[in-house]
Amino acid sequence: MLDPEGKAIKKSLQKVGFEDVEDARVGKQIKLRLKAESKEEVRSEVDKMCKKILANPVIHQYNIKVEGI
Amino acid sequence: MLDPEGKAIKKSLQKVGFEDVEDARVGKQIKLRLKAESKEEVRSEVDKMCKKILANPVIHQYNIKVEGI
Image 1 (cartoon, each protein chain N blue to C red):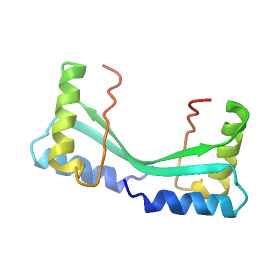
Image 2 (cartoon, helix red, strand yellow):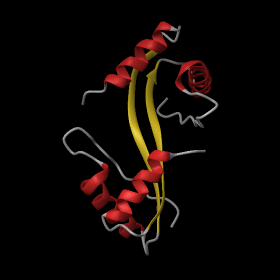
Image 3 (spheres, rainbow over the protein chains, first blue to last red):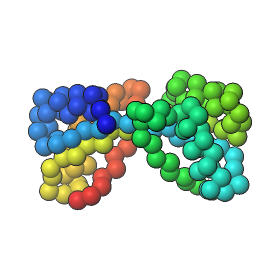
Image 4 (cartoon, one colour):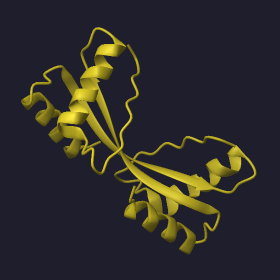
C-alpha cells in the first residue's frame, strides 16, 4: 500500500538526526461514540459506516476496535 | 480541542442514517519502526521526535504506545 506521507516522515526524521528510524506509516484514527446494546452491534454498525462512507476499499485498509460497553 | 473533521464525519454519518452516533473525533496515527535497546529508549526517542517535528504542542495532543521489543 502506497504511503507517501510515511516516506516523507521517515526522511525528515533521519535528516534531523534520528537515523535509527527504519520505517514510518501514517494512518487516520476515527474515534466514534455511539449508543448500542452490545459490542457485536457496535462492530457491525461501524463496519457498515466504513463500507458506506468512512473508508475507500481501493486505497484504505481499516480495522475496528470496540471499547467500553 | 477543536476537531472540525470529527464534527463533519458525525454530521454525514447521521445524515445517511446512523443516528446513534453521538460523537466523532479524528486523529493521525504514525507507526514507526526503529532500532533500540529497550522500550524506555524507544519511548524517549519517539517523545523527542514528537517535540522536534511530529507534533505541534499548541494544537496537538499525542500519546506514545510501544510494542514488540
